[in-house]
Image 1 (cartoon, rainbow, N blue to C red):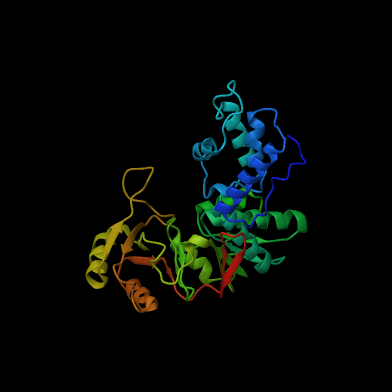
Image 2: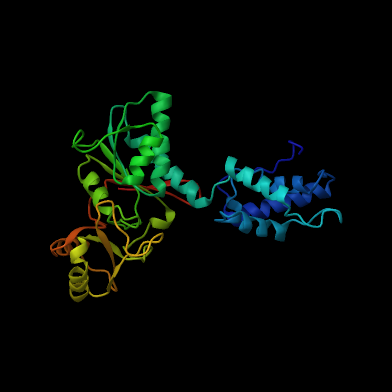
Length: 333
């Protein structure tokens, strides 16, 4: 394709403007006589951008293909179908190189900002769990390789442990490093008072232990997790880890005392309930009305025999980084 055709547009354009401008420039260019050799070059015009975010949060090949099919039409009768296997391969290869959904870009931006601002050479780092933490671990590994950082990494879950090992980082634990310099973890929701809901991935107890034993607890998330009041964005309930033999009486007491519904979380890839890394079960408490004090509720939940811990992280986070839709990173705390 001709490299002089200027189709790369600013990253900060929103999805609607991005698509509109690309289409406009394409039409203007073709009207002026810029022709392309084949239908695949037509497709590449739309792919010569920093990401695929101008189609919104499209992550699947089929959804992207459908969007392209409604915009681009084949040039000749010999090319009646734009979406050939070769075309799909172009999409797939481009996505592998530079395509990343808006949400994933936001996660990456938040994670890298947190690591860059809070991790120093020689630190003992608590490594959280979840999809956003993957980008934080990537950045930690990059600092080790490019700057020679010597870090000790303490995991909060089996997933975190595997991330640390697979990235060649030093695996440690709270026996060797009982006090951590910083813990970096994701969240399911963060309210205006920096209270968190965590545990959507089932790792809440170890996450809270690591965070509580860190000098600084930093949260990383994308724009979807930012809210004014807990329960606004995250509607799956407050995760509560319980001893298996006690789940039924705990469930009953929660519902009687606080209302709502405490649902036993079921596994997705096996029959029966989800089992945590600690061999416990999880109740997701779906409350009907947000309480006036989450701290009081958390303390009362913890007093129920059989409750191991809750996914309420109250006044624990020092700072939170949110990757936003416009490509910027906002902070709280």
